[in-house]
Length: 349
Image (cartoon, rainbow, N blue to C red; front, side, top):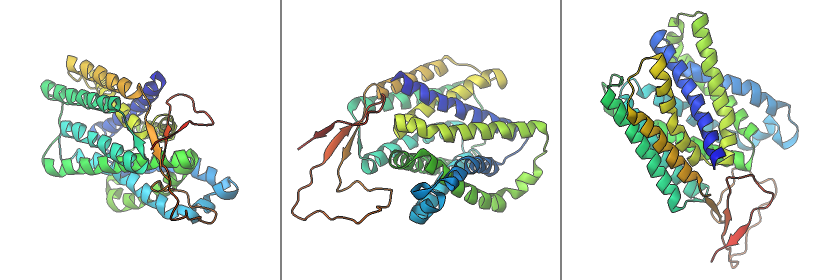
């Protein structure tokens, strides 16, 4: 349980690094290039993971994967890119508090998609932990308002709020799809294909929408170092997140990421001279308590061959079950501990 919480906090710290470098780039150097920053990350994923797939042999080779399911990864790459773009774009229209609160919409999206598509079943303690985490986020947003933390322009809140909700929805779809792929296929395949299609689509979007902004960037060693720091944190996040998701779940990871804003705030107390409020500490520990509650017991997966659809294309002939045969669903209990070769199956009526 503690390992699961700790792994999630490593991801939060990486997001904190992403946020700090982005803040310096946009506010101190006026480099507003979110698509270019994503493009750098996708290029790194391409160089490391896509090339790894290219040199593999057999069914795990890049060309073999593209022949079987290229269009699925193309959709996933586009979803991942636009999720990042919509949330960053929302900062131009709405307030920081609105973004913090509405970004939590990713949690119910992940829960619903996990329930219907991954067949994950939750217990009462899981929902209690989720509610406690969201209360912690509300406490942090309230503290921001009380101390007068910079809220942003907020000139067209409706547009900004809709952008956040759209980005959160796409994040949820991407995270659940990621969990399914790394459990049924492999982490390297997921990251390699995301790098391939993410670089392709972000390159097109960069050329169309952001090439003028890129030319305005006053390049020097400081800006170059910030881009390197951002890319390193982003690459680390993408590379490490599948490991944490496989050990826990997409829902657990998104709950852990709620503390990222607080880590950024604590750094901002020293770097940007933010005002401090005791509510921030209360918010931090409330979220941690919610994470402990959620991680204190395992979820379980109801596996029913009538509804569970494979992402992998079947390599052999499809065998239809007789119409008269009655298929009984089974339930697999998952553990947050070390995986074993055989998982107990409990047949339910």
